[in-house]
Length: 185
Image 1 (cartoon, one colour):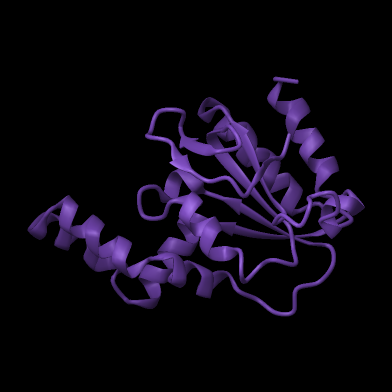
Image 2: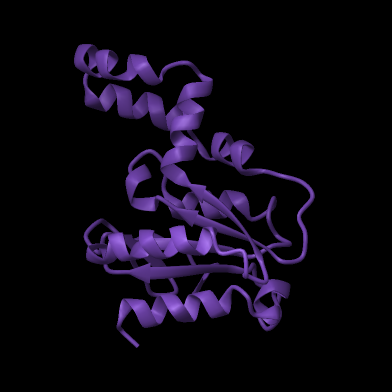
């Protein structure tokens, strides 16, 4: 099942499956699924997620967090968004990157993503993983999210690969260890 359209259709079925929504069959593991795709399929995946998010016939409630949008919101809250280009010009890219990674850390992302109450049928959909790189790394964010979202499933749309032990963004970067998730399809 390598065709991206078929895989996305299977994902649509998975997120509505009662056992998936209840986290059954996972041997007490966290209900985190990673949907890996070839980065060349990014536009097809974006189109699919846009359609999915506007589909009122779903039997689940999707809560989408585009990591790049969350990052920009954190910057807006700190009132630095407009100042970043000038600071980068003045102090350099590495300086800005270090500052951004300190300010927009896992805690800041989780604070933006938390909501209450979590309800049966909620599914967190994480998108924008590639766009938010290198400011946030999905393997460390998922690790930090676990205590806050243990009771609802998380699906990550991931432009790269996950072999059950390592995630590799864009199939090019150095793999990062993450073993708590499952491949979605």
